[in-house]
Length: 186
Image 1 (cartoon, rainbow, N blue to C red):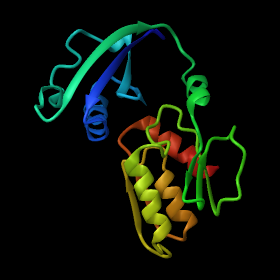
Image 2 (image 1 turned 120 degrees about the vertical axis):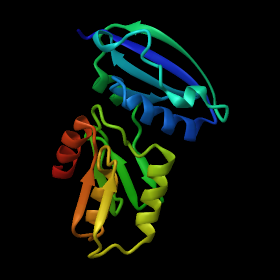
Image 3 (image 1 turned 90 degrees about the vertical axis):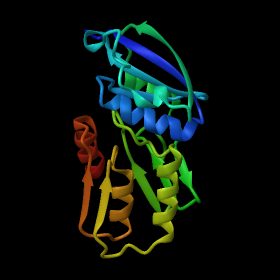
Image 4 (image 1 turned 180 degrees about the horizontal axis):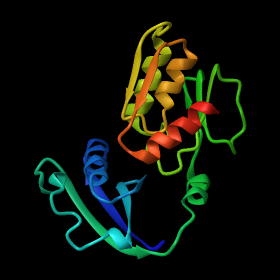
């Protein structure tokens, strides 16, 4: 079935809470996530959903975070189309541009072309953005590099562009693995 259940979480503090919640929900049947102004939305196929799906999600019980949520049944959605409508390219310090195939190429020194599909890692997340900044400031020529939990492989791609060798990009999510291979080949 292509019917999904969408959970919409309001999270305080948002950044750290979103990261932890996505990691925990990823251990369940949730297969896609999107950032919202107040937290995240997470989606699970209705066939894989049950009323106890949030049991064992530790952050929901944590006193360090304030989290509330709503959920709804969602008819089939073309996620790539939705993503394309909302995805803005990322410019990091004018030197690195992360974009999708439908965005125009810029004259940035490092032009990274990705299509995240169902993978996490468009470069919009603060930690990814900070790692891009760090890589831009660091000479990685000839250095061994590991991108652990690579998502779309943005960091591995940038490291390779900057001369790092060898590079390993690893993710436990099969969508990320397959998507990373596609993005590296672009």
